[in-house]
Length: 608
Image (tube, rainbow, N blue to C red; front, top):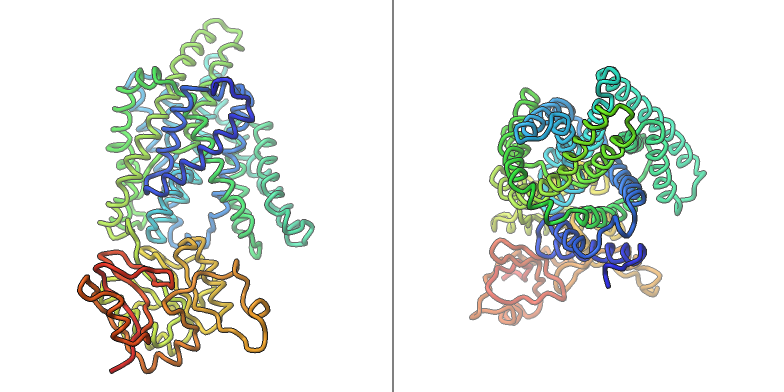
């Protein structure tokens, strides 16, 4: 029976379900958090994590996992990326947070929560979080500015919310026994000092160890993981719940050290984060019962309405006044605040801590007050569960259309990026542009750039492998990269790098040119280091340069009456099929593409 699972079997089941849910969500293009929460809720009716793992192990594991997730997210926060956004990001992480806390607290109090619990709920629900923002950004792919604003807010506000919750908790525990204000200030100061010192010292040690090559490359990921976990545990040991702030500061410090290359560490952490997020949502959702959901549902419904219609718009609009954010960006930010795993985890932890605190207080009157608060705090868990589901559904399913209307993203990006701008690629880009397909050419050759601009095609002057192209290039609306430079290895490297953003299915490089006199296994780049080969038949760079001068770019409408086979017969097999445009969908033609149905074929055909 599933209710008799041992811890190993339970964790194996949770891992499998977490991965399957995320694959399913990616397939049907809905936020994965929704599927994870629903599956976790269903699993929890058969077996609860508390029964299998025990509360102490459960919350200990949840705390470590959340710390790892925040550390991974903070490794992507580079100050160079936000040189024009520092003021609005500072506002989002300070003024907006303060306003949201006050408004959420007021909402909770008006809906019947004691003021102490309302303050705690407000502190917890100011967070958004990378666990829900990152998947939405992967699907949406908005402008660089919007992406930076949302990522920084999601990652930095998470530990701020946790620290706020700690301060409220400390004030509640202080009660009448001492001055709550003094207790709060002491906790805040200790948290900041502990987090800053540990992050700075450990960050310097890691930087020196990596730069002086004291640690072999294959252990970098493991060492950084151990460092993050150790920093989290040590920080929490010195000051309760300060670990999340510590690992966030540690990640930001490391991400901004000069000449410290952590791409391989970040990739390792990204894979781990996807797994941990899935498992955490399944496990924590399993702790909520149907009775709890039904009991809190009316209150939660009003709470969600207040969060979406009042709290987020008011806090963002007032918080970003005079910050330089455009009207369109501000509108999108007001409709983008899904809650994530930190809210779920911190809620569960503090509800349990209040229960423990009530048992350890000597003053009978204060103990009775804490018991009442602990009972009310237990209602926070299903409340936050419903808030997470509702906000992810509202924002995750609705933000795409809004972003598209505001011109800040596309719900279905179809644009094509050409790495390199040879003469034939400029002509192809011009035809795609006429068909309404967003096109971007990237080149560092003055002649190529001049030719592209004369053709009226969007072009960026940059080395495709430069820091600017890899990290700062605005890929809003772009779906595909086709590397067409005159260097095969350069094409391979560019395609491999951009696969991290666009996916391997949407990155292509021209067929590498063989070297005569040697076997292909000695001359061609290893297959795992190369991307897909575009066009049919697949030409090399030299072949395209040699043939393109006597060929023209043609757009042909294919129908049931004039098929691709008719097109091939007309041009005697000399044509090179490049792209298909079917409605608003653009695809690169390969030797495996079935070109049929009603569509527009873009190709190179002989002149005349």
